[in-house]
Length: 98
Image (cartoon, rainbow, N blue to C red; front, side):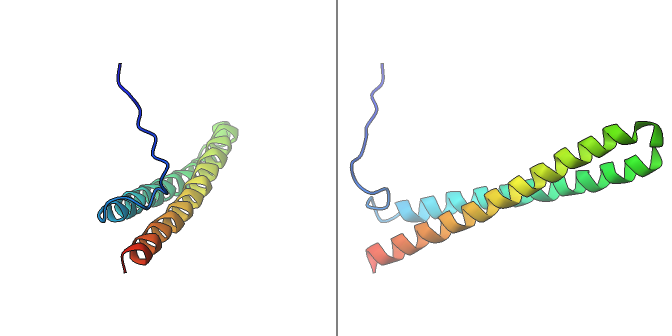
């Protein structure tokens, strides 16, 4: 059975490179969230177009459009969150080592 090490220190008070690693992680997550927002937004536009072209199944397409738009908004919000986390990691890293 493995053990868990719980550190009582602030998450930024580690080795000099840790804040850079954390900053990179948040940058990567921000980029993935932006990509997800763009993809979901494109799918929402696609479903909106399908709703117009396929009146028989328009209700289904509108529901898919709304779901995709909601996912796009959530992904955009997560990208903003990760952007702030990245700035915070960078600020703490520079503050702690300069």
